[in-house]
Length: 120
Image 1 (cartoon, rainbow, N blue to C red):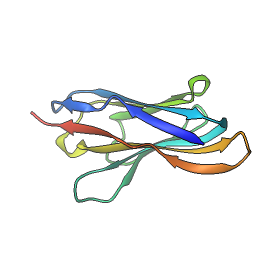
Image 2: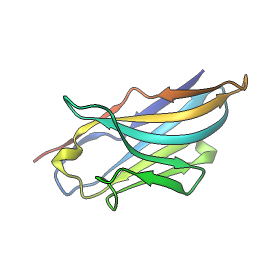
Image 3: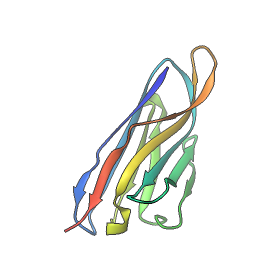
Image 4: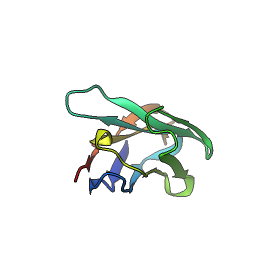
């Protein structure tokens, strides 16, 4: 089994910054795509950013130029640096990963989420 644990959420003022982290643990053989999704109250979950390898990245148009996704493969960790935060970025942020376990089974995994609130 593979587990994803997010951290780094909290309350921040508009224009501020936060850095989210997501560490994968468990019976990991390898990890492919890692991604961040978010779900605002009353809205569907949406993709924020994803990364394959060390530099192949994609971003939602709403966060381009403000958010940066990165990963440390040695630590099985993905990060989301969020700058110039806006109230509309308020949401629960979820980590997602395609991981192969030591039994060579590949599955998609979700973390439990971390709340980001952007408000005065």
